[in-house]
Structures are given as structure tokens and as C-alpha cells.
Image (cartoon, rainbow over all chains, first blue to last red; front, side, top):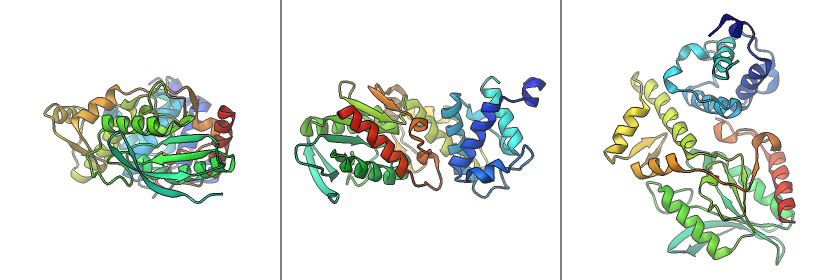
Length: 94
Length: 223
């Protein structure tokens, strides 16, 4: 991953990640809008259990038209919102 | 509006529990092809709302439960090929004006049938990888060990049946899903209907507005 991609993920990828979180976890747009890149996800959001992780990855694949290899998935990408956005941007070629 | 009626329909050697919503006499009939596996449960309320919205537009619906799915008495394992045959037999027996599928239901519909697909899964591989992923996440949590696609394929090559996310998947159905592709005439994407991803939601939200938008599009196709 280039540092440029990390610093400036495309806005549409970030919006898509936020929309997926809102929709899959039924969080509501207001709660997701209040999150920033440092907001912790896995372990901090009770809605994000292991089943929801699978649904969230599948939804990201559908909306970003990407394939996520399960070998690439570890706890780190769900550490906080910024990590998830960067992972999605990398997969989407952003 | 007519109340839903549950009947047992005989078609091509299959007995299918079928939910009917009648509309005006002589009006068109729409056959509903439901999603597969857990997505069928998660989308059930949406399909009830869609049936109701179609009925209000003078369109009747028939929604069969295919072998080893929903209320069908066959306890399984689910066979993709058998579900396809049963849907085709039901379609031949009832001659619907249109088949409307949701998600993986699109994979079951015959290529020659007039077909509108809502939020279709276009390749069966997607549903198989979703099942494998859910299973892998749960196995990791349960045992601390990864479960790989390779391990699943090895089991299927030995003709074993794997239970993935609660659903027994035979080698035959895994192979059929890997090959399956949808060929819908018309596709209504989730975004175009403002349909939330009910099939991935832990807590499905109300989607009556999306059901109404889908019913409008289907009514236009039939007019």
C-alpha cells in the first residue's frame, strides 16, 4: 500500500464503508456520521460480532465490486474505522 | 386485499408448500423465486410486503418453498439441481406472466422464462463463498484455527457433506453453485430501489418502501 493511498482514500470508498456499516449493523446514519477514523470497531461495537463481520465483508465486496480473500482478513482491519477504510481503498485500487 | 392462502401444489413429481396472494380475476400471476439458505429467512418479511404491494396493483403472486427449503417437508440436504427442477415444474404448471427472483433465487430461474431479478446474486460462487466465510469466522472463534476454502474443497472431493452456517452443503450442490450464473432479463439493483441489505443484516429493518418501488417496476414490466 502506498502512503498516498493511506493518507487520502477516495471519498466514495469511505462513504461506501460508512454506508455498509450503517446498513449491515443497523447503526443508523447519525451514529456512523459521528464516527471518525480513530473510532474503534471490533470489540467496541456490540453489533459487530463474528457473524456480522462476514456480512460486512460480503456487503463491501458487493458494493465496491471487489473480492476479499479470507486469508487477508484479520482483526487489524476492524481495529478502527480508518483501518477498515484503508483496507477497502487498497482492495478497490484507490 | 385477499388474505394469503397456503396450499400444497403438485408439479412434476414435487409437492411444494406455496403461499398465494390472489388479486383480481384474470389478472397476471407472478412466480416468486426466493433467496437461498439464511437469506431466505432474512428476506421473508420483504417478500410478504412485495406480494402485498403487487396484489394492490392487481397482480397475483405464488411463492413456493422449494425442496429442503422454507416450510418444505423434505429435511434435506438442499439440492440446487432439485430446487431448479422443482421451480421449473411449478412454472410449467402455473404459467406465470413473470418470475420475480430475489438474491440467489435468480440462479434458479430458467433462462427462457420472463424474469425480473431483485438485487440478484449473478454468480452462485458468491453465495458459496459467503457460506464458507461465515463458517470460517465461526470456526476461528470456536477453535482458534482457520478454516480454509482448500479444506472445504478437499472434503467435497471426498464426496462429504459440509455444514456451513447451519446448512448442509453436499459436494453436488457446491459444484452446482460454483457453476451457476443468472441470466435475468431485467435486474432491479438494491440501490435503485433503496433496498437495504436485509440478507446481510443481523437485525433486518423494515423495507416496505423498497417493496412498493419494486412492485411499481414489476407492474410496469407487465403492463
